[in-house]
Image 1 (cartoon, one colour):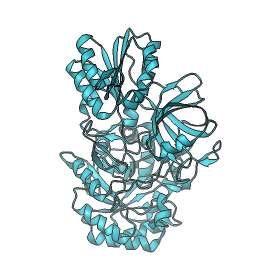
Image 2 (cartoon, one colour):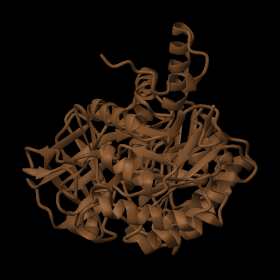
Image 3 (tube, rainbow over the protein chains, first blue to last red):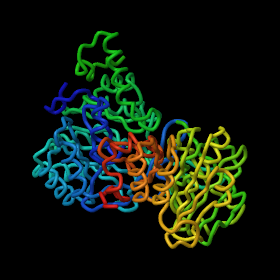
Image 4 (cartoon, each protein chain N blue to C red):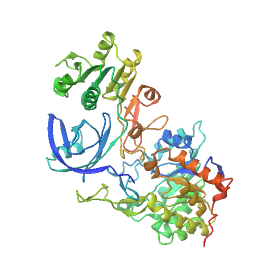
Length: 301
Length: 264
């Protein structure tokens, strides 16, 4: 199948922030059956991120507050170049800037790499102390950043949106109007908090973090459906997908490809191989010839 | 999702030497030698630590004071709360034939745990080489004497045992006796040297590796090793000679807290 014109071996994609940035882990995910990999969000300068614990489990999923740990755009793109060296796999470089100018500088740097797509992380919930309200919640910032990046970027641009906006479909529409080539959604939900009652403390060092995992899947499906009906650009769907049936449901809602994140914690790295097998088994049983046949076919009551 | 976290008061603190203390928690943790836990001091952070020992009702961790986190830990008293999750990672194998263990510095606690485990399994012949800079830095000398058929010591300054490294003593021991398996735990350069010796004698071996770890459960990517994306916290930290052969970054570089490649 194809995503934004690139041939991909499956619609499964590594979500940003999972398994870091090293070329070797990105290649491993492709070998395990993913069609695309998203890097950890790269910023202009290296960031250590928050102190641990950076993740906390609860019944419905995980909360995390990594704090945009990354080696910086320079060293991060060195890993992307190694990823592409004598290796077939589609890469999405995720970037995070503090303002539109930084996003433009990052997009210019990514132009000089072999990356396939650029993803704008407009929606990290975990650095609000440092960077204030996420851009994905501010309509004029979505327009400003996407437009500015589109004037320089040589790559197709995905805008990564937050489920926390009041009108997510409206935000997607703004990104499309500003020139975005695709939408990645949803970033983690909330903030949430997991509490250790014995210690009377939040488990995360940062006290709160974005919620992911199975509990956000229904929200992701609804929002993806809303956006699918509103825009004409492809959606890279993410949010609580843990198995093949989840991925099928997300594509039926409107996703053109599906990213997996927290399920790597629950099912291990085999999650890509097994999810792909589960999808193909479903498709064979129910008569779908191609992944693309699933996109958006949901019939609402 | 699965949750392995436990919050417990410190049951006992034992000073091993001026910079090393053993912290004991009362818990029935089913852990094996070479595995680790993630330890939280609330408000200070979370770090991985190798497990020294477990019993039916306790888990012990021997920790060196090397930075702000361990400094905060060393300020704590019996009864103060710690939170742990785990055990994580792949433990040492359980070879019960003729076994040699080679340790260096404060990486020897997992070998003490391994010696105990192998004795419980009825190991035929167990030799340990305990290496450190100086006599004061040696750990668990009486324990290794009790647990091993032969227990050797090497110090860089010759203050106790053989003058020189544990790897030099390993050479001598291997030239005198035959072994089925070698377990190695120490600084990376020392393990690299010991691995070369074991390879030369064509003896299967395992090393206990360290990389910066943040989540401990295989999702953050901090500890991933090149070139095949080996996830050390899940697929290690104990690595056998066949896997080690493929880890091209071993002995050469690691990634720092931001993920940048840094020479060792």
